[in-house]
Structures are given as C-alpha cells and as structure tokens.
Image (tube, rainbow, N blue to C red; front, side, top):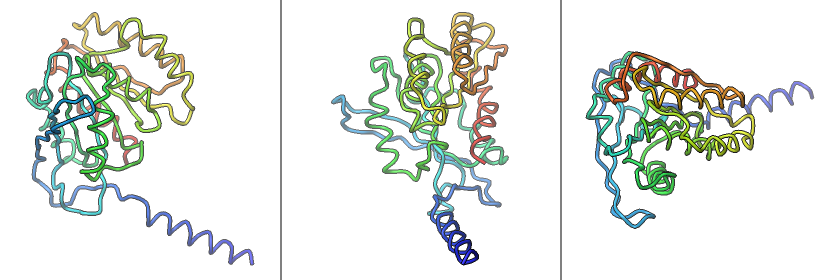
Length: 258
C-alpha cells in the first residue's frame, strides 16, 4: 500500500511538471539578432493613444510552445519610447542572449511617465496587452521592471505596489524620490516576506544628486531585508552610461531565470 501511494504521488508530480509552462531556450544554431516592432494602441484607459516598442529575442519563433521572461523598460523624463534603443541597448540584449549568459527574453520599451507618475497606463493597458499578444511567462519570477531616472522611480513604484506580479525592479540613475520614503517603508512593511522583490541599483559617481537618492533607497531596502545590489561606477546621468551597465544587470537578472 505504501509503495502504491508513493507511485501515485510520483505520477502526479511528473504530470504537474509536464504541464508547467516551458521557458524559452536559445536554439544551438541560432546566430540571428533580435528584432523590434512598434506597437500602437489607438485608445488607452486615459483616453489617448499610446506607442511603445517590443524587442523580440534571437530566433524568437523557434518554439511555438515556449514562454519568455519579460522586462518592462521605462525611459526618463522627457524621453520617448525609443530612448533606450536609440542609445544602443539592442546589441547588448543580443550579445547577452547569443552568448547564453541569459535565456531569451522579451523587452517592452514604454513611453515616459512624465504625466503619469504612477504608471497607470503601463499597468492598466500595456501589461494586459502584452500578456494577451505575446508568449510571456506568467510566473512573477520572470516579470521585471527597469527604468532610468524618472523611469527608475516608476519601476520601483510598480514593483513595490504589485509584488505579487513582479519579482524585481532595476533603477538606473535613480533612487527613492524625495518625500516618498514613508510610502516605500509602508509598501515594504506590508509586503509578505515571500513576495519581497530583488532590486538592482546603478548610479554614476558624476550623478551626485541621484547617487544620494540611490544610497537612501539602498538603506531602506537593507532595513527591510530586501535583497539588493548598488553598483556605483564612473559615469554621468545618461543613457550611454546606463547601457554600459546593462550586461551586469542582465547577469544579475539571470540568476533567477536559470
């Protein structure tokens, strides 16, 4: 009887594993770069149209059943949805994937949150659209938000307010905005321990104002036992510097994706 129970549980376990979403892998012979496509929503919950970019990784269509991690990438104040790609981020993605440093992933480059500080359009319109139209992995482990400057602020607001959906936030040239320390503490104190995200911070030594805000954010995360890293390098408050740090960010991200 004991043997039969073990066998039954074993079969149930194998069945559950076989039904688990399949994470995309890179074909052995893949050498093609990724591609980008422009998407336009004619009307959003705010009543206006919205355009964004989607990066599809090398050999994207090689496995119709595979699901992909996704990174929502937000630009800084006054920048558009092409800002990160205009600064040369696509070759960084291609190289990291083709060198097998990280599994293939999808990137959604949004517009600025200048007039939408809580990123409500991203949350209410862009994310549901992406989930419906692209084969993104539903597990929060494979859902990340990253941004530069004001986009970094939007990134932590999204992730800390919705830790059940996202497992990590990345802030480049950014940190906790002055006056919002109390809200960050509230988010972290109310968060279930198993939902605490990982946080990646990067700031240049010549970005003195935001470096201070990044250090304050790192202190808040430390006080609330949130796993995080703060990389400080020789750089300014610019996409050019942040892009050079993306290989480091992607390797950090891949630690949870293997």
